Image 1 (tube, one colour):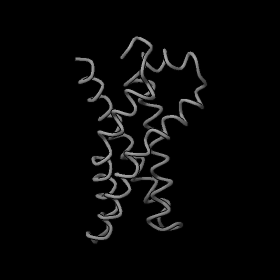
Image 2 (cartoon, one colour):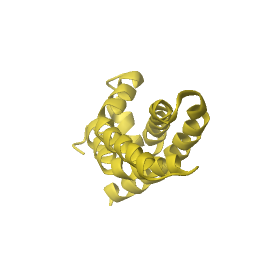
Image 3 (cartoon, one colour):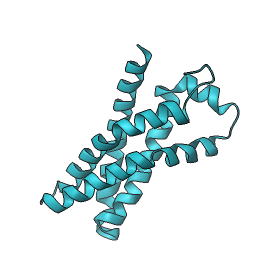
Image 4 (cartoon, helix red, strand yellow):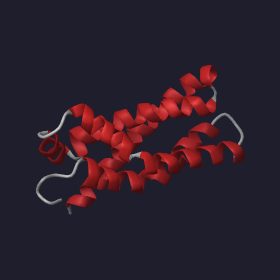
Length: 136
């Protein structure tokens, strides 16, 4: 089933995004603090996942849909449609920072936030950003 394969690929790409998110967060947090750094780390992860999802997860749909619009427009559309997932993601992150102490609390928050936003992000990516012109 195509949607199952896409969801699995989306999840694998999500793990790559999670790694980018945590690395950027821990690099920037000493300079910006845990909350501002999280905004930039999320944008870095979202950019990474857009690129991988475009190339692998939704490759056929992306090629079809992109034929009528610019890559930048698609990228900005991806970021815009990730808003619902981003709100859930950031909320879970903030709650984790308030409830959990320790060196890895922020990484746990990023992971929990990623899981919280995953469903909304998959549906947004599949049906709004990378939808194909074949009705799918």
